[in-house]
Length: 353
Image 1 (cartoon, rainbow, N blue to C red):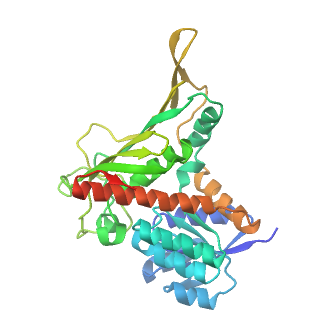
Image 2 (tube, rainbow, N blue to C red; image 1 turned 90 degrees about the horizontal axis):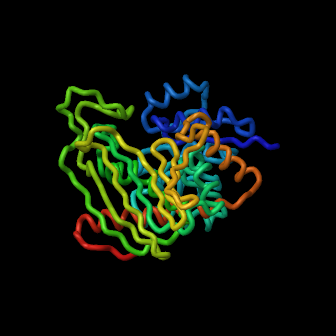
Image 3 (cartoon, rainbow, N blue to C red; image 1 turned 180 degrees about the horizontal axis):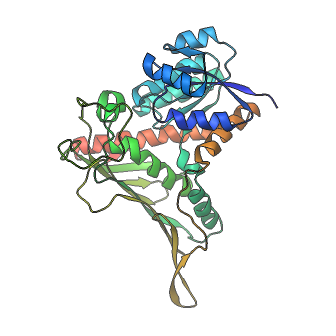
């Protein structure tokens, strides 16, 4: 099988997950790295023993036409321009989540991929989790029946990463666009990707980045400094209504006065309910009795092999010319949901999609 040549654009924190996964894939040659920060780029080149290093993506694509695919691991505001540049150069692209700053940029990315006949995949890595696979098995077997309500929760008590994450010009927003994308996409994916029709949302800027706390932050970005901008929301909540009548409730925060961090996926159907927190439990009835079911195995999300599965899926699609356009289409839909939540929060009105 042909080995494809892959370049990674952006060598910050998340790029390490991509790079390590590519290095473990026998069908990939990690070919080049690109970052606008020369020092960060140099360290990455030394760490991974890559000598094709560029501070300009256009120069890299021009100098190395043999590149087959590109992973975009930049801050959010660069996702669209870096992705579109690679697509127009004839490369297939895996772009980290969120797809872009907004739905307009995301649609342009998708349109460019189609016009250029290239593959575009968005890094919705939670879809590849061991927990999602188990949940999908039960859903496919009809254990929940018709799913009509879901809750997606991703709350941090003190978890503003700092760096570019708090700078709205580069990030596009706070926990909603950073953390919310994971749980909104996963719940919608498990519900069969229904079409969103309306959104009501609210965002709050009350606690900032809690820079005055003596407690350590467990989610510090590699770009964090003492003088970081923090102009994004610290908490967001929303109700999303879908075309099949189902409703999703979302809560996500960087900073919130709660006892513990929370990360839960809950689905409620006519035959049963399901909660992942972090182990999976199913709530139903049997023989006339209310019944709670847990599995005789760990179902909590494991990061062991998680990105390898995502990268493997992308590489397989590139090598074997498989259609993965639906993932990018889901990315556009997700950006429309996020745009609507932010607009609803600003106008204090329901937003129709």
